[in-house]
Image: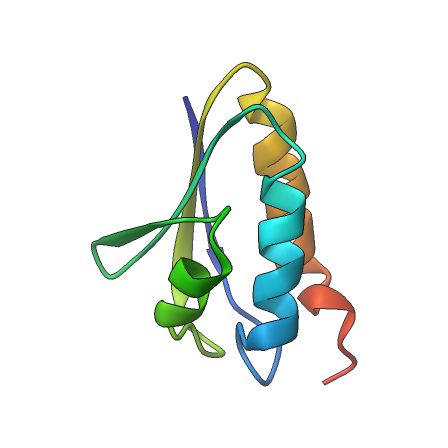
Length: 89
């Protein structure tokens, strides 16, 4: 199991497009990818679950991965947050 806490830094937070990117990325890996915010955990492979987190700029998200290629899944998921999901603002 791997985990990392990251802060949402893109201005609009995790809206529909970033949620889709997270889901698409998490689905590439043969492991569990969980996002945790305020004690609530959601499956990152479910776009509906990711969107219900309502993560906004400044929120802290804990990424938890476990399984076959959990380290790679953690790094890829964290990279999306660090790149601000490709958004300029």
